[in-house]
Amino acid sequence: MKLPRDLTGDELLRGLRRIGYVFERQVGSHMIAKCVSPRPHSVTVPNHKPLKVGTLSAILHEIALQRGLSIEALLNEMKL
Image (cartoon, rainbow, N blue to C red; front, side, top):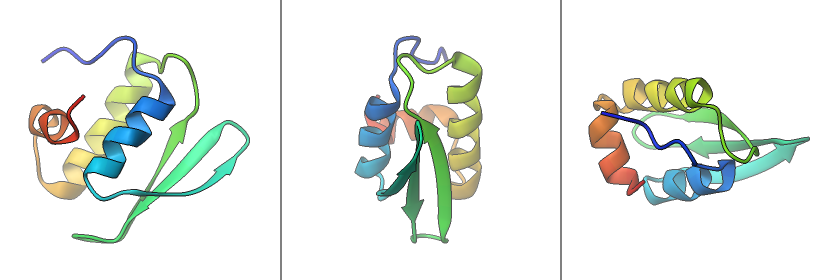
């Protein structure tokens, strides 16, 4: 599956909110989001326009691994 090429940090954060992540704080241009269910987890999302494909892939891979989903299922759940 191809990843979105024009996704911004804000749009990714909106998708993370749909699956239970909550914006915690921002340090410079990096936003930190936390999730407590199913296990406590935090992820750092750069507030860049657009996100680099490798950065997006790494973030999605980390979240998919944490939730036990494929990246395609995660993207569908996040509605990206």
